[in-house]
Length: 329
Length: 146
Image (cartoon, rainbow over all chains, first blue to last red; front, side, top):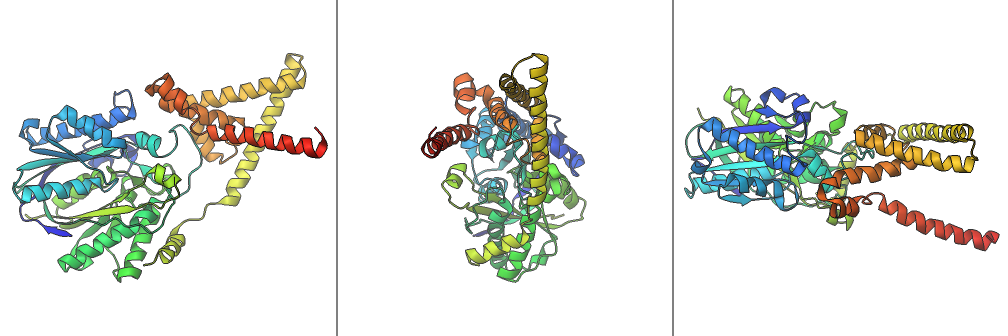
């Protein structure tokens, strides 16, 4: 399912990160980075909530607007009952839709907002996506201070929140089209190899998009996947070639960009709902505004993993949503 | 693409874990842990003039304390990761598993947090440790008569 948009623009964005992203290669592009994991709060969950409210406030400050000027807030995160977003929404007091697609949440939010703006149901919308490394580890994996060895294919959840302000005012980056992904399951049960879980979802969404829009892959200056990681990126490229006969040249993965690739602490790269928007809203948008990139395709990939279902020996389904971004001026 | 075919593709790009290297690391570090334990037993039995059986209990307590303290100080997890299973299999690993879970849930209260979650990782070790001790004890009774 592909939507075309004529009047939707991402006017501005804000990005706030934790300490590991600060040490990464893109640190200078983020609006703000913290040195610790608590940001003055008592728990990691509350810290993530603070990241979201702070990133929205920072965004509104950049736009010289108040919370009352915003029609809608769409947001999601990784935690159970998307608590970080729900609690942030209760502080912000903007009409709110909470969404969950694991690490594809950011683009799902952008698509929903774009549809409503295009149909003039709303004038503007703030989309947020966030993740917190320690809060996610605690919920999905082992205690944070537990040091059991992990395989090389494991990914490292990013800590951060990214917000985007969308409206029909012709300013910033144009949202040109979007493709909604289908949930795919290729029988991968390894919760430490999310790249392998998500690669077919990303590939099928990309293929659907190219088919619907009758475009070639090189129509885009850059095709970005969300968080496939070092090994998932290779699987994705090979899969695109063998399954669809499409070879990708102008392709990268945000998981491999947010941390240095030789950073052993990050294993195969970053992950989490914040990974793709943190890189896109800062580094990629900066390049687009400078004119180095004109057409960018962002495919946010989400592994719909639940520890309960993994323990029941079921394979992990995944989804990928895609959005096409353009510079118009 | 069929699932089997895809799984082969995944296998092609999945890096091999260095099983031999990890094993050797764990063997050497685990061996040193054993040496440290033996040293502590000898040390306690010499200093306090007690039999080695009692000294070995104090040695166990010492290693558990060290494992817990270093976990709380925040760097034992990095040691455990680099030592592979060299620090997990000995008693320090058990202490580390319990302490890290307790730390994680301390903000959710004594009963609903620490009490309910402290055995999250270590619980299995206790259950199957007790069961297998019982089973092997029974085998010994049958074969050797006690």
